[in-house]
Length: 336
Image (cartoon, rainbow, N blue to C red; front, side, top):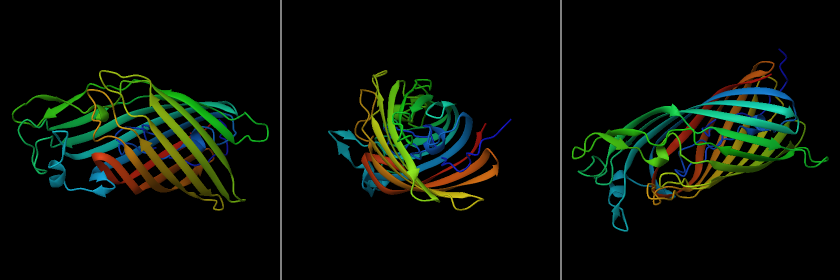
């Protein structure tokens, strides 16, 4: 088995998802880091690559617009006569297996298989911000299931003199369950409770994924990339369609150190609100910007480990949503 020398590429996770690039209408539910510098063609090598990544996001900070909000103040909000749901926490753990094959340097395909572990607690729509009220629909759920698989192809052979420009075309498939239930904590309505559609392992929809990217050298030791990805659900499923979203990722890495490769990303995401009778159009969607420092460490030729921390520098969410104070991604990658 011969390993290629592709250890100094940019890695990430998380998640996924998406998934390496997760676009959920719950604007802060997914990791926006891009692993595409290495996994979707920001290179010109043949061969097969395997990436296994873990992402952690603990959403425990309530936010409305660009500022934080207390649970007590959130419980007093009414929109068109409907009381605001007050979520308590959502802890996300994403495990994503990425498989990539490059048919030739300018053409490749990437498969992303996510497994989602998620714990969610909501106080419902009749709480005082501390305890749930009668008839508020409060519940707790624990999710352990496969998510929606993504298949994304890339091509970067349009221009003879511009080999480092490429396009992405793919789909998110409806492989994840979208009808899981949790346990009601409302004493007036005990038993199973429907999990919010935006927090299901899958959306039930097939989504079109379109993207463009560019990568180049700034100097001998400095490389950069830019990437724009758009994702749009093609139809509504069971009175729900996730909001379309756009991710802009910018990355910079330093190649002058032999034992590790430091790098940083700027990740911006804009997501529209969910639509449909089973959606929450009030408290989904938003615009977020993150700074994401990280490092890749080679183990042997063709095998490396990586880690990133993602910290928000701007958050503007619709309605009231839970956001994480930070997220973290670690993983291992092999190139054959």
